[in-house]
Image (cartoon, rainbow over all chains, first blue to last red; front, side, top):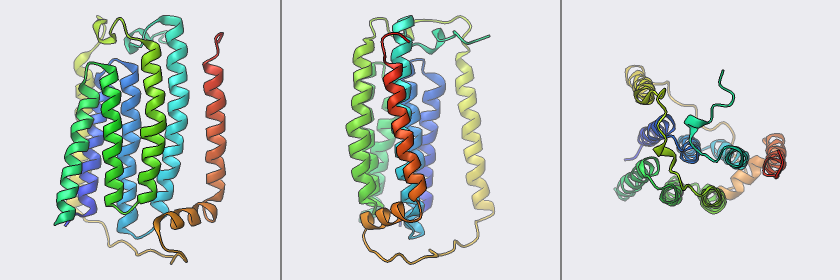
Length: 100
Length: 171
Protein backbone atom coordinates (compact mmCIF):
# COMPACT_ATOMS: atom_id res chain seq x y z
CA UNK A 1 0.00 0.00 0.00
CA UNK A 2 1.45 3.32 -1.08
CA UNK A 3 0.61 6.07 1.37
CA UNK A 4 1.30 9.83 1.12
CA UNK A 5 4.30 9.19 3.37
CA UNK A 6 5.98 7.33 0.51
CA UNK A 7 5.43 10.28 -1.79
CA UNK A 8 6.68 12.69 0.85
CA UNK A 9 9.87 10.67 1.33
CA UNK A 10 10.43 10.51 -2.44
CA UNK A 11 9.84 14.25 -2.68
CA UNK A 12 12.23 14.95 0.21
CA UNK A 13 14.92 12.78 -1.39
CA UNK A 14 14.52 14.60 -4.71
CA UNK A 15 14.66 17.93 -2.90
CA UNK A 16 17.90 16.93 -1.18
CA UNK A 17 19.55 15.78 -4.41
CA UNK A 18 18.77 19.12 -6.03
CA UNK A 19 19.82 21.17 -3.02
CA UNK A 20 23.20 19.42 -3.23
CA UNK A 21 23.23 20.28 -6.94
CA UNK A 22 22.59 23.96 -6.21
CA UNK A 23 25.24 24.12 -3.50
CA UNK A 24 28.03 22.13 -5.15
CA UNK A 25 27.89 22.73 -8.89
CA UNK A 26 29.48 25.81 -10.45
CA UNK A 27 27.73 25.82 -13.83
CA UNK A 28 24.84 28.26 -13.51
CA UNK A 29 22.75 26.42 -16.11
CA UNK A 30 22.84 23.25 -14.00
CA UNK A 31 21.99 25.30 -10.91
CA UNK A 32 18.94 26.67 -12.74
CA UNK A 33 17.87 23.15 -13.72
CA UNK A 34 18.19 22.08 -10.09
CA UNK A 35 15.91 24.94 -9.03
CA UNK A 36 13.30 23.85 -11.58
CA UNK A 37 13.47 20.33 -10.20
CA UNK A 38 13.10 21.56 -6.62
CA UNK A 39 9.77 23.13 -7.67
CA UNK A 40 8.88 19.79 -9.25
CA UNK A 41 9.58 17.93 -6.00
CA UNK A 42 7.17 20.28 -4.23
CA UNK A 43 4.54 19.56 -6.90
CA UNK A 44 4.72 15.82 -6.16
CA UNK A 45 3.83 16.58 -2.54
CA UNK A 46 0.90 18.78 -3.54
CA UNK A 47 -0.54 16.17 -5.92
CA UNK A 48 -0.12 13.36 -3.35
CA UNK A 49 -2.08 15.32 -0.74
CA UNK A 50 -4.64 16.32 -3.33
CA UNK A 51 -5.31 12.64 -3.88
CA UNK A 52 -5.30 11.82 -0.17
CA UNK A 53 -7.85 14.53 0.66
CA UNK A 54 -9.93 13.92 -2.49
CA UNK A 55 -9.71 17.64 -3.14
CA UNK A 56 -8.67 19.30 -6.36
CA UNK A 57 -7.21 22.47 -4.83
CA UNK A 58 -3.73 20.95 -4.54
CA UNK A 59 -3.69 20.33 -8.27
CA UNK A 60 -4.79 23.93 -8.92
CA UNK A 61 -1.77 25.08 -6.93
CA UNK A 62 0.46 22.85 -9.04
CA UNK A 63 -0.82 24.71 -12.11
CA UNK A 64 0.24 27.99 -10.52
CA UNK A 65 3.64 26.60 -9.53
CA UNK A 66 4.22 25.48 -13.13
CA UNK A 67 3.29 28.95 -14.39
CA UNK A 68 5.74 30.59 -11.99
CA UNK A 69 8.46 28.07 -12.92
CA UNK A 70 7.99 28.87 -16.61
CA UNK A 71 8.26 32.61 -15.91
CA UNK A 72 11.35 32.03 -13.78
CA UNK A 73 13.01 29.94 -16.49
CA UNK A 74 12.38 32.58 -19.17
CA UNK A 75 13.74 35.49 -17.11
CA UNK A 76 16.60 33.49 -15.62
CA UNK A 77 17.85 32.22 -18.95
CA UNK A 78 17.59 35.77 -20.31
CA UNK A 79 19.82 36.93 -17.47
CA UNK A 80 22.29 34.11 -18.16
CA UNK A 81 22.51 35.08 -21.85
CA UNK A 82 22.93 38.78 -21.05
CA UNK A 83 25.66 37.97 -18.56
CA UNK A 84 27.40 35.62 -20.99
CA UNK A 85 27.54 38.37 -23.62
CA UNK A 86 29.32 40.63 -21.15
CA UNK A 87 31.69 38.26 -19.35
CA UNK A 88 31.93 35.14 -21.59
CA UNK A 89 31.40 32.76 -18.70
CA UNK A 90 28.69 30.70 -17.00
CA UNK A 91 30.77 29.99 -13.91
CA UNK A 92 29.16 31.38 -10.78
CA UNK A 93 32.57 31.90 -9.15
CA UNK A 94 33.28 34.55 -11.79
CA UNK A 95 29.91 36.25 -11.32
CA UNK A 96 31.05 38.63 -8.62
CA UNK A 97 30.25 42.05 -10.10
CA UNK A 98 27.92 42.93 -7.22
CA UNK A 99 30.00 41.41 -4.44
CA UNK A 100 31.24 43.97 -1.93
CA UNK B 1 0.46 -4.61 -5.28
CA UNK B 2 0.64 -3.40 -8.85
CA UNK B 3 0.53 0.16 -7.58
CA UNK B 4 3.48 -0.51 -5.28
CA UNK B 5 5.55 -2.02 -8.12
CA UNK B 6 4.74 0.94 -10.37
CA UNK B 7 5.56 3.45 -7.63
CA UNK B 8 8.91 1.92 -6.73
CA UNK B 9 9.94 1.54 -10.38
CA UNK B 10 9.06 5.13 -11.24
CA UNK B 11 10.62 6.43 -8.02
CA UNK B 12 13.88 4.61 -8.78
CA UNK B 13 14.00 6.13 -12.28
CA UNK B 14 13.16 9.63 -10.99
CA UNK B 15 15.85 9.50 -8.32
CA UNK B 16 18.43 8.01 -10.68
CA UNK B 17 17.90 10.63 -13.33
CA UNK B 18 17.93 13.37 -10.69
CA UNK B 19 21.38 12.20 -9.56
CA UNK B 20 22.55 12.10 -13.19
CA UNK B 21 21.26 15.64 -13.85
CA UNK B 22 23.36 17.13 -11.08
CA UNK B 23 26.42 14.89 -11.52
CA UNK B 24 27.03 14.81 -15.30
CA UNK B 25 29.97 16.80 -16.60
CA UNK B 26 28.46 17.54 -20.01
CA UNK B 27 25.71 20.17 -19.79
CA UNK B 28 23.87 18.87 -22.88
CA UNK B 29 23.65 15.39 -21.33
CA UNK B 30 22.38 17.00 -18.14
CA UNK B 31 19.54 18.68 -20.07
CA UNK B 32 18.62 15.38 -21.75
CA UNK B 33 18.47 13.62 -18.37
CA UNK B 34 16.27 16.51 -17.25
CA UNK B 35 13.75 15.60 -19.99
CA UNK B 36 13.66 11.98 -18.80
CA UNK B 37 13.25 13.10 -15.21
CA UNK B 38 10.28 15.31 -16.14
CA UNK B 39 8.68 12.46 -18.09
CA UNK B 40 8.95 10.08 -15.13
CA UNK B 41 7.48 12.69 -12.79
CA UNK B 42 4.58 12.94 -15.27
CA UNK B 43 4.18 9.16 -14.94
CA UNK B 44 4.03 9.65 -11.18
CA UNK B 45 1.19 12.16 -11.68
CA UNK B 46 -0.71 9.59 -13.75
CA UNK B 47 -0.23 7.09 -10.91
CA UNK B 48 -1.75 9.68 -8.56
CA UNK B 49 -4.78 10.16 -10.81
CA UNK B 50 -3.80 13.65 -12.00
CA UNK B 51 -3.88 13.11 -15.75
CA UNK B 52 -4.33 16.79 -16.58
CA UNK B 53 -1.19 17.73 -14.67
CA UNK B 54 0.73 14.92 -16.35
CA UNK B 55 -0.21 16.37 -19.74
CA UNK B 56 0.72 19.88 -18.59
CA UNK B 57 4.03 18.58 -17.23
CA UNK B 58 4.94 16.98 -20.56
CA UNK B 59 3.81 20.00 -22.60
CA UNK B 60 5.26 22.81 -20.51
CA UNK B 61 8.36 21.24 -18.97
CA UNK B 62 9.50 18.51 -21.34
CA UNK B 63 8.27 20.44 -24.38
CA UNK B 64 8.84 24.10 -23.64
CA UNK B 65 11.26 24.77 -20.82
CA UNK B 66 13.75 22.09 -21.84
CA UNK B 67 13.91 23.46 -25.39
CA UNK B 68 14.66 26.85 -23.86
CA UNK B 69 17.47 25.29 -21.82
CA UNK B 70 18.90 23.52 -24.87
CA UNK B 71 18.89 26.79 -26.82
CA UNK B 72 20.82 28.52 -24.06
CA UNK B 73 23.33 25.65 -23.75
CA UNK B 74 23.92 25.73 -27.50
CA UNK B 75 24.20 29.54 -27.61
CA UNK B 76 26.58 29.69 -24.68
CA UNK B 77 28.79 26.99 -26.25
CA UNK B 78 31.06 26.06 -23.38
CA UNK B 79 34.48 25.91 -25.02
CA UNK B 80 36.03 26.54 -21.64
CA UNK B 81 34.15 24.27 -19.22
CA UNK B 82 33.02 26.23 -16.19
CA UNK B 83 34.27 23.56 -13.81
CA UNK B 84 37.83 24.09 -15.06
CA UNK B 85 38.15 27.49 -13.45
CA UNK B 86 39.43 27.19 -9.90
CA UNK B 87 38.62 29.98 -7.52
CA UNK B 88 41.20 30.05 -4.71
CA UNK B 89 38.64 31.57 -2.34
CA UNK B 90 36.07 28.86 -3.00
CA UNK B 91 35.07 26.82 0.01
CA UNK B 92 34.22 23.52 -1.63
CA UNK B 93 33.25 21.67 1.52
CA UNK B 94 30.86 24.42 2.61
CA UNK B 95 28.27 23.36 0.02
CA UNK B 96 28.22 19.82 1.35
CA UNK B 97 28.04 21.11 4.92
CA UNK B 98 25.03 23.32 4.14
CA UNK B 99 23.35 20.42 2.30
CA UNK B 100 23.94 18.24 5.38
CA UNK B 101 22.20 20.90 7.49
CA UNK B 102 19.15 20.79 5.18
CA UNK B 103 19.18 16.97 5.32
CA UNK B 104 19.26 17.05 9.13
CA UNK B 105 16.33 19.46 9.10
CA UNK B 106 14.28 17.17 6.84
CA UNK B 107 15.14 14.19 9.05
CA UNK B 108 14.05 16.13 12.13
CA UNK B 109 10.71 16.94 10.48
CA UNK B 110 10.18 13.28 9.55
CA UNK B 111 11.10 12.13 13.08
CA UNK B 112 8.74 14.70 14.57
CA UNK B 113 5.95 13.33 12.39
CA UNK B 114 6.52 9.87 13.84
CA UNK B 115 6.75 11.08 17.44
CA UNK B 116 3.63 13.23 17.27
CA UNK B 117 1.34 12.11 14.45
CA UNK B 118 -0.81 14.78 12.90
CA UNK B 119 -4.49 14.84 13.87
CA UNK B 120 -6.86 13.07 11.55
CA UNK B 121 -7.29 15.04 8.38
CA UNK B 122 -10.65 16.66 7.75
CA UNK B 123 -12.43 15.24 4.75
CA UNK B 124 -13.05 17.37 1.70
CA UNK B 125 -15.38 20.11 2.79
CA UNK B 126 -17.08 20.78 -0.51
CA UNK B 127 -18.59 18.31 -2.90
CA UNK B 128 -17.74 19.42 -6.39
CA UNK B 129 -20.56 19.24 -8.91
CA UNK B 130 -18.43 17.69 -11.61
CA UNK B 131 -16.45 14.49 -12.02
CA UNK B 132 -13.21 13.90 -13.82
CA UNK B 133 -9.80 15.39 -13.25
CA UNK B 134 -9.71 18.04 -15.97
CA UNK B 135 -13.24 19.24 -15.33
CA UNK B 136 -12.56 19.52 -11.61
CA UNK B 137 -9.41 21.62 -12.11
CA UNK B 138 -11.11 23.78 -14.71
CA UNK B 139 -14.08 24.30 -12.42
CA UNK B 140 -11.84 25.39 -9.52
CA UNK B 141 -9.64 27.60 -11.73
CA UNK B 142 -12.59 29.52 -13.14
CA UNK B 143 -14.62 29.86 -9.94
CA UNK B 144 -12.74 29.97 -6.62
CA UNK B 145 -9.31 30.73 -8.09
CA UNK B 146 -10.22 33.08 -10.90
CA UNK B 147 -8.23 36.07 -9.62
CA UNK B 148 -5.01 34.08 -8.94
CA UNK B 149 -5.43 32.60 -12.41
CA UNK B 150 -5.58 36.07 -13.99
CA UNK B 151 -2.60 37.21 -11.89
CA UNK B 152 -0.64 34.19 -13.13
CA UNK B 153 -1.38 35.19 -16.71
CA UNK B 154 -0.17 38.73 -15.95
CA UNK B 155 3.00 37.25 -14.43
CA UNK B 156 3.66 35.27 -17.58
CA UNK B 157 3.14 38.38 -19.71
CA UNK B 158 5.56 40.39 -17.56
CA UNK B 159 8.12 37.55 -17.69
CA UNK B 160 7.83 37.40 -21.47
CA UNK B 161 8.42 41.15 -21.86
CA UNK B 162 11.27 40.98 -19.34
CA UNK B 163 12.96 38.14 -21.21
CA UNK B 164 12.68 40.06 -24.50
CA UNK B 165 14.21 43.19 -22.99
CA UNK B 166 17.01 41.16 -21.33
CA UNK B 167 17.85 39.47 -24.62
CA UNK B 168 18.19 42.76 -26.52
CA UNK B 169 21.59 43.51 -27.93
CA UNK B 170 22.37 46.62 -25.88
CA UNK B 171 21.39 46.30 -22.24
